[in-house]
Image (cartoon, rainbow, N blue to C red; front, side, top):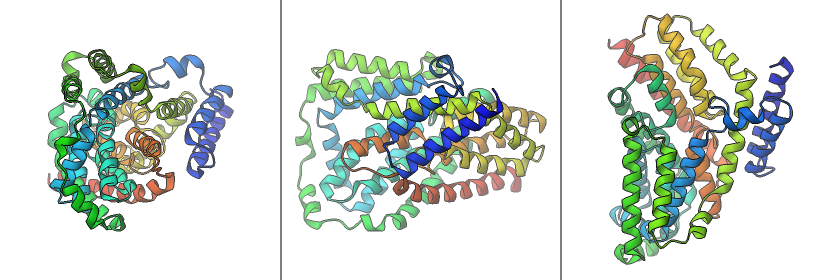
Length: 432
């Protein structure tokens, strides 16, 4: 690519990002407009945008979201989410902070077993109903769940899509992630709980009358269609099993989700047209536009140049290199989706590790994983789960603005990256 195209691609991305931040126009319109400009200036082309695995639209993400949104749409019709909302509130004695802690723990745990997008698709509708029952603002609870999903995702190989890329490139197993990163994930969840107690203290003033009304409810009465519920839960269990058995079945999560959605629509009494209305089409369009824009940065060599500069700065200094990798990945993943970022950085990291003679117990890979996953909390578009939940909130007429999310996200990201830096130093350098 020519030099002017690289600068033009940066200008288009920066301009689009500025529009998303300012919220002068809808983020979907901004992303699609930016994608169109990337194509117009020749930063990418139709072949690359629609068919390239490295710099095109990630159709696995798009169809995974679509399939899971359809399954959630069927489950919503059964009354399951109302049941879970009432059950969780009653177990927390209708105290908002206890409810938030419960939702954080559930979300983080589920995100370690599923990918974080699937987790928030299941938890967010419950959260909206919980907040409606307790008459508390939904935004703090949804934002806290996003943070929990991205933190929980670091614990296992399947917890976040970048982990799968890193595991494949570095030869790391499910147990490697569990042993090295799951203990840190537990600590970071505790850090998050302490932070939300301070950040969202104004959201914990519950309505005593509403709390008493919820405590008097029988959650079993919320179920409207027991047959459809049994069918939906059975299919969801099969889909989750398919996700977990991905290394054995060799089926992409998107295929598993679409098969599950098709099966559920076929065997249940749900109307296909109504189920399709549950799909967050604007969210899918936003992802498509974002992928095309990032593809323009990849095709023009912008991201590879950033990676090369990082590699030159690190050299063979493993301690300083791992800290720089952690910090740089955290910053960049807050701006660029962490999937293409990790796909670009994985070969660079492999070269660095080889140059260092193998490194200390894969510390460079752990630094890349932590930076990419935790950096996703920094901004409203830093990770896929963020975009999905913001779309759900907007559809529920409880919109979360870019800055409303980001002012908390920057604090949580800074705190979790600092704790992660301490963890890496202690475990792989100071105590070895």
